[in-house]
Length: 267
Image (spheres, helix red, strand yellow):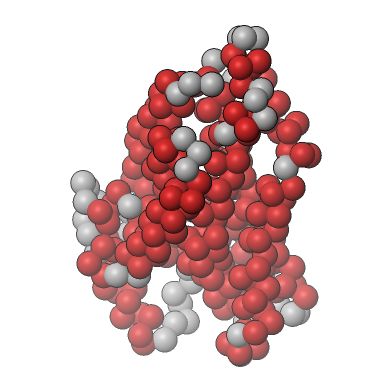
């Protein structure tokens, strides 16, 4: 498995799409800094860090990272078939299930790197504006955790990509629909005000990640509207063990299905 992962890393120099997708993580933070009037109205480094990291969590992770993972998965999973080299790999022999899992591991690292890159861009912006980045590193690691959640949340769509066997357009359309649904649900009280258990507020990556990361923002100097929101949803926050227990269960299920479907498909 490690040798396969090293081989996938070695192929990255021929995949500019990966580096382009990683660079996209800087778009929303830069957009906030350049075009949003609220950015110039921040009164402290702590407020700037919180607001900009919130944009990274609420926009980049949902609207950019999850679709990017599915598009990259399509490229990874069917590259050998497109280049007619999969038969050669099978005769080495290479186990197709292990090959699929190595590609998913590469996407896992990409998701973490995507959120890390966005976070570091925010750090540079905050420092360039002359603020002290109070609380940044706490939220930086929360961002890595959310990247992992988004990776796990994208696995159902990647399973669909594998099942449809290179039906890229349909898969991408469904992915954008799934991403939009997750984003809307993460802003909807009906989903985020759910007890921890077998319900959509826990099983969907959007509401689950919101109920986890939101508690890490600084709430000492917030407005009345935000304070009311925090008071309303705080009983439904989930802990790190709870959040990643769900992530581990869903990851194990969907990775097993992805490996099984990919293995059963012909060369």
